[in-house]
Amino acid sequence: ANKTYPDPSAIREELVQKYPAKVAKKRTKSIIINDPETVPEVQANVRTVPGIITQRGCSYAGCKGVVLGPTRDIVNITHGPIGCSFYSWLTRRNQTKPETDADANFITYCFSTDMQEENIVFGGEKKLKVAIQEAYDLFHPKSIAIFSTCPVGLIGDDVHAAAREMKEKLGDCNVFGFSCEGYRGVSQSAGHHIANNGVFKHMVGRNNEKKEGKFRLNLLGEYNIGGDAFEIERIFKKCGITLVSSFSGNSTVGQLENAHMADLNVIMCHRSINYMGEMMETKYGIPWMKINFVGAESSAKSLRRIAQYFGDEGLKAKVEEVIAEELPKVKAVIDEIRPRTEGKTAMLFVGGSRAHHYQDLFTELGMTTVAAGYEFAHRDDYEGREVLPGIKIDADSKNIEELKVEADPELYKPRKSEAELEALKAEGLEINGYEGMMKQMMKKSLVVDDISHYESEKLIEIYKPDIFCAGIKEKYVVQKMGVPLKQLHSYDYGGPYTGFEGAVNFYRDIDRMVNNPVWKLIKAPWETAAGENDGVLEA
Ligand code: CFN
Ligand code: HCA
Image (tube, rainbow, N blue to C red; front, side):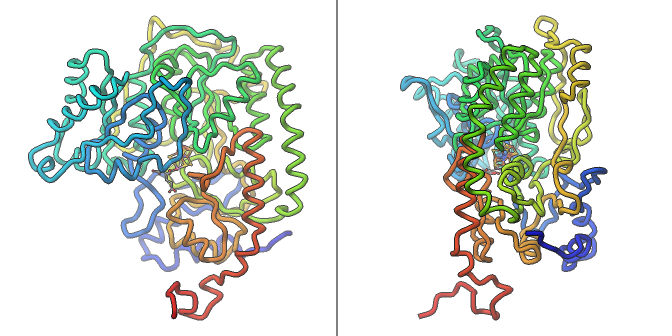
């Protein structure tokens, strides 16, 4: 199964060859031949060249859809023309499970001010305040959040002033706004940052009640796509680990307001929520630790890391017991499937964390990742981030206001002393750090940031991977080339893929895709004479 490919530097040349010289020069800095030992620099989090078809989304999507969207009892009002709200209406497949039928769940609703021309010309604040009042009267939510779309910033509506006024007027409802206009920053990543700042400022720290439980943590950067968080919750429960709050899959307003009472933040998706981890560390003294529950081995490792952090022998034993119970069931499925997947190749071009995490699941199937990249991650997600403390090697766009965070004199309490942190570090437990994607990828594999549509077509033509992982915009174009595309955003209506049960789901889905004979019946454009496979129906 050892496949040979052209020299990666020749591939890199070919990818940019058709671009104008200036564009080629810029793109070359984002197309990197990997070396896990001395990880090279990757140009990331820069503006996409206009005209290039990017996979990226916008700031509003990152703020409203990604970070705030999954919390079930906030009413999220999109201030803008209806399209922004409509296209972010449940498409991300973030699931939620209210504890009782009486619990609020607004996730299935789509709230918008539905701005019209008149509002663009004369201002939309009045309409926004009416919308807030209407939402309050209908649902009596604990919180209402307002999300700015592009025109809001362009016409100068002040969503924050409107929120303050309505919060005052309503009394028992926390109303706050986000300046997450789509054009801010260079991608949805800016929206994550804006959302983190807003949630930290307006929600975290409002409830100081200390919940029961010996090992209390927050799960950061897990959004319950396809039920992923449910599987992690199942495992935590089995181990006796208490989940105080989740940012933000299957979460509630109450949880987020109480998050600062936990003793550890574990981070799944570093890209979207690292700001929250850092701010909670600064203000409350809660360390954060990168974990990964995508992949059976990674899940086991993550559980062991959590037990190591708490340093409790009982927890360590319980975690081993759970792993010993769960892992053999997974291994049995791997043994069955692996002969059919061994030696096959994958490419992953997704978001800001999954292009890394899902490589572990492919490794468990004996598959090799020949090329991967993020849509909007920053250099730290590729190259890794130094251990301790608060190191920023990559700044967000200038027009995101940074929150000034200081230790809270009442509530700041280092959960671990400097000496304890040093001791854990000496044991190999990385606190407040992240290794990044490239250290885990093979030498000479290709890393491409913000891949363009054209570059991905070229890569497929050159490598002919057995599976390509991306999103809905890429799916059918790639499949028409005879290569199956697995959506790693929405999971193609499948999932969960986290933890032990999720790993089994993933293996089975991938097996079905890469071993389906239908792909051989499709002729890729480079295999057909011009026009033969152009999709035009003939009588
Ligand atoms: S659920 Fe997450 S895991 S939050 Fe982020 S970086 Fe998006 S919505 Mo799509 S699937 Fe994707 Fe990640 Fe974090 Fe999702 S890889 S692009 S903004 N993402
Ligand atoms: C977003 C959301 C998205 C899009 C997925 C896709 C998601 O970026 O706004 O392109 O298929 O996961 O739903 O990333």
